[in-house]
Image 1 (cartoon, rainbow, N blue to C red):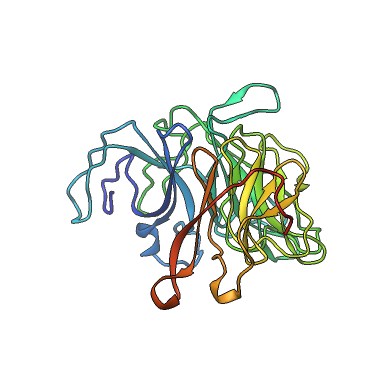
Image 2: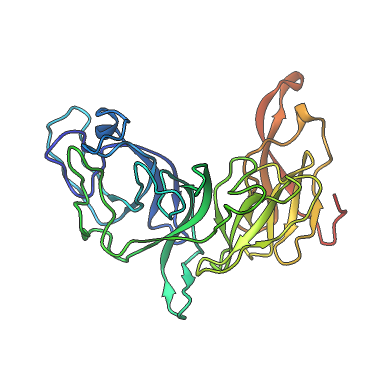
Length: 323
């Protein structure tokens, strides 16, 4: 961390949150807010960048040594950089975003680009755009990452007193979905993080159908039209994860833990439907590495107290009873 000048490439100047390892366990992603800019105020005046949520990564390219000009400055073993770009006032109808968040690594080892070559590391994330009518909504974005994030692009990796740290050379930010014309534009439903199939072929996200029901959708990271996966009358009610073999997605629906076939969209109930006060929470259902168990949270404990607890349900042989 580096809260006062001189700023050092590889060190950031604010808070990071929701840290997630890449599929190979080597890189770490996170969301980031810049305290140096936050202290300058959040009114866009052209004199300085405003603090906006962005994505960063930390990679084993350290150590990073910083000056001792601030009591919270400290050295690090990993090299940290911001990898997304935001705009203070995104142009209506453009691909500019005011916020980058809810990210996920694409594939265990990346994905295949449209030209057939392989992109080793990339993040899918929600980017907040401004539609032509001035309303804001989230779309699916991707940032392709270079193998070496320690090389600066057209601006300093470490930022300045009035500019946020800039992405490294070769970081390419792309928009995948364009939903402004839909009845319910943008990603919607419970808070969720974008999650990719293990082979990197599809990115899953939540969006409402024309009836206003949150459904699972898929979009290829190389680009293409999104595909609606589920078509249920009861909406997807939580964040979700993929099974290690890419065949299933686990989530909450109709106050139960459910499993959805990633090819057909058919869903299966794994836990009994419970009253709302006892139902699984709107948090991610996590599959075990062997694909046999799902961990989730729901209230429970002594005297049926309403404290969230971790529960697990075993995945039985398919076929399963339908929800």
